Amino acid sequence: EITRVPLPHLAAVDIALVRVNRSGGYGAAVAELSSGKPLEIGTPTELLRVNPDEGAMHTRLEPLRHAWSPETQQLAFINSNTELYIFSTETGKCMLRNPLPQAPCTFLRWDPGTGKTLALTLRGNGVGIWSVESGADVKMWTGMQATDSLMRLSADSKSFDPTSACWSRAGQLAIGMSDGSFAVWDSVSSQVSTPSRSGKHKAGITAGDWIDSLFAPALALASRDTIKISKGFETAEWGATAIKLKLGRASSRNSLGGDGVTSPLSKLGSSSSSLILRKARTDPEGLEFIDLKFSSGGKYLAVLAYPAHSPHAKQIVVYEVQDSRETLVAVREYVGNSEDDRPFAMGWVGGDHSLMTFSQGMDTGCVRAIIPTGSGSSSEPSWPADGEPSPGRMSTGACTATGLVVALFDTAGGGLAVLFDAKLQVLSRITLPGVPQSMSLHAPPIGGAGVGSCHTMSVSFEAGGVQVWKL
Image 1 (tube, rainbow, N blue to C red):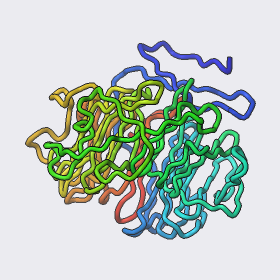
Image 2 (spheres, one colour; image 1 turned 90 degrees about the vertical axis):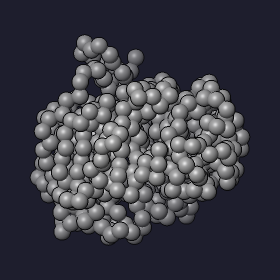
Image 3 (cartoon, rainbow, N blue to C red; image 1 turned 90 degrees about the horizontal axis):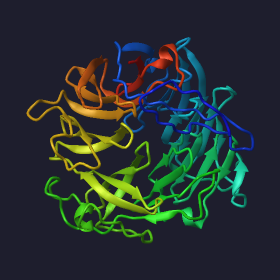
């Protein structure tokens, strides 16, 4: 027995591992509760505003990346001068200003388990780690010892070029490199794992996601045309049984998506056909992967991709993970209904039950729920309804496992945030002071109180600046 966590009486309880000390001692396993109660959203209240003249400026070539920690109530962002700023809602003032190497930032996020460790990646310059508890400057990790599979942070002559990264709830950070290699840093033990030959991709890693399971956590990584899923990730090591999974060659067109959209389902023949396991290789007729999202139960893997010959025709494919993670079965796809309905973002709500898709056109945007076992019937809600106008071009969208869905729009008067429940019923609208650029959306942290017991949202703007709201 590691620990015991008292649970309140609930109709339904989902337990997910948040953090366990794997360095020899016993840590705390925390239960994430899902009571099935209706989503409660209050009157949106501004918690923090950082203006461009306070450091939150950017250029079109260097967008303003930001990350909000609901656990510590701290906002981090990297501006166009490649400076890291951290502001606190407690004082409303800057806590840290740290110059970084001049390079594009591809990732900036707090660890989802504790919200106390911030990770960032800079192209060609490595990974930066900052801890709330230490308060010291950012520690740059620019290389790793190739002779040691598990090691502490260090720097040597073998620098790497990070192209993507993702956190697990257990505090493990997976970093994908431009050469197809990757590393996993464990924030609990400060150790690093490098892959065996079975884990390396032949092209740069473009996306990744974790299955946060108490008994069998796993990591999926995608490169240009290949997905690999580990069977397990018990310590901090990529298992030697990592399986390569690749979409089959598909050359037919899907009538819903118009010309230039590849349908993997049409190649497979039916939704119950298994994918063929094969070595990674360039497939000009296949799909190239740009994002991965596991459902919270790990039953499904949603993929955002585009045909190699048509990069603008993005589409979403939902796979069921079967046979101890050795097989992916394509069960649903969504390619949009027109040029004004192209998916560009996605997220899961309600466990394994519903995938929210966010689509945009020149001056439009829509949100649609996809049920993996459904067939695209009218039971899958969408917004706005057929025949109703969109408030503007959708800038971005996000959702939480608790069922909160938010879409941001570029409107004639500036910006608009529309809040929905999981059935896409409008809960609230927030008029934004400018055109929104990016968003970070968070459910209440475990055991949160006061502001920490509410959903929170942070938004950056095209003209600069970041705002944080309590929802």
